Length: 218
Image (cartoon, rainbow, N blue to C red; front, side):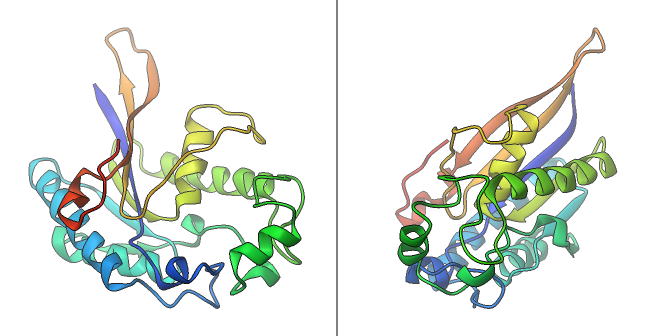
């Protein structure tokens, strides 16, 4: 039996993604037209699910691209959107607004390359972000036991969920591809022996984006 279900939607393509810029709070100007189209396709797919088995809550992080994605889903499902800082991405500090190529060159790699070192002045460390965001996600899971919860989130939030629910050690070199507009689903199962475990039902599912010419993945 499935008890709790967590569905993570990575936001639609944003202008900062197209421009190759670090999209912190100062730089995020929202989604591109393609990003809006991705969010519309997501909303159609989730609305069909919602009619059969309603979702209980919809969360979005505070950055514009997340709220825009969640607003489209909210309208389609008639489910209120809750903006929550606990679903935010990493703090980028002085990297906010700079080209990722420059940031990675200066830091000798991306955030994952040296996970205990900031990638810019005032930024998180990758391991520090995973630990903090993992605590926040656990708070939300505990708050919504037995419910179906949607998250309009960053790709990093999906990695946080996998780290937490797979029990990966902080600092693990494992990585995950998370495409714009993709769906990732975790389900908490309870069997007839009273045993419980989290199961990854799907990761990086983009089947709903096929009409946009985006390759399907799962």
